[in-house]
Image 1: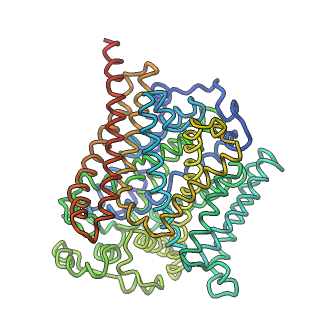
Image 2: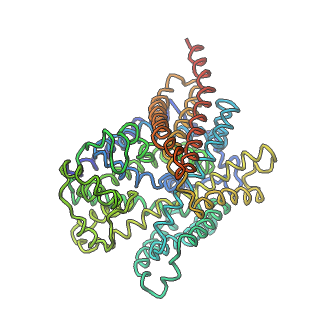
Image 3: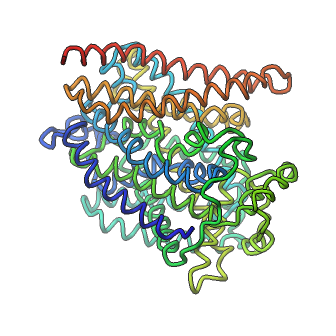
Length: 601
């Protein structure tokens, strides 16, 4: 299969969906009101509620939602073949992910920029609000710890990546002061400055390793954890226009530019997709994901099609900066569809490798020999791994997790462009740094969102906490949030709870879609509730099945063995807790939906 038709087809489908389907959603389902004053104006405080330029806010929103999922998930799911992941991302990004993000952002803007938990309380009842708060805090801490660990692993002992990413902080500060204080509204000027400085930082970073400055940007895991915690705290505490939004905007420019170049490279190179459309592993028994295609494909891909974490951004930082409701569609829908495109490009890049090379990279070396006969029987006999390792300058066999195989795939595409044949090592290391940048922007926004949620919850006990610009509350809740996720990274215990994140994240998406359904029905638009009910049922059933299988096949067996008792018990309790949260919310919401439909008959 040639990759070019899939690239062009993806872009065409997403453009048509944005223009037609989401014009219908905006007109009939989550109806916008351009005459209504948004919370950014009505509750303006210069810190958190701040009217933001549409494109700068798009940059923040996209950077916040696009973490590890759209890059790594599709790569790991490629073990099932190219076609299952491609179809789910193409359909899911439109019918599930973009709907989920758009409706929640609209609901939050029309609820004064409040959190998903606060919306659940008002649209369903108080019990649902408390339940959602518990689920969100749990998932946020696990997500921040897991994503933080990925960033630290990518940057540890890497002076190039650390220098480039560290450079984005002062660049963003200058951009923020430029756009919002010195030259108000001059977004283009700040953008040109930021892009030029970012390019210089990327180019200069290439020469840091081996130079006299290398030691200044080379850190071990513990030191990087401490530095990441400081950055997360500052991003949460400082005014949103000063660091968070301009840095996310700058990061998004780089992210979208690189993915755009990758798309152009795929069209120019027109590589063959070497992974079959379907592999035998759709029946289970895969070396990367042991379970069957259903339900594990949908849990593994996650953000490429739909992610519960998006609902936190859509009801956290973004709604407090929406200048007018007309901006909701390009920000929410546009960001999700771009993320869907990113996921598909990542899948194509990874599947352009020889299948045997793909598995040799993503399966631990000690486990590869056991699965090798089966891979040969499937026709995967040709390998180019030695040449790839020599080209990138690193040993890549057994580098599990998806990041390395994606980096190699991207480097292979870029180096296949005429005139770039000898730059594969450069492109590989650039791709690894690029992945770390992708993920870091989720951590800063997630920390601030967690701060908002804690302030809402503590505000029930002591009212000043409800004011998001109250400095003592700001400092305390930011500190608590940073301490929670940094503790798990620093102590190494994040690996204990990370396995349950995939199902927990998708169950949060189910909760968000249930809240969205209540929002639509409560406004008298029940005949359009199918827009959120269909993805809610599919994602909910799929994820509940996955959670049940994880409990049955992984966590309970772990509990029966003394060596794995603690991690098994923790994952069992946390997974059951999230499942119970979903049941409680549906128990409270479903009768209201039925009552609304009966009243209309």
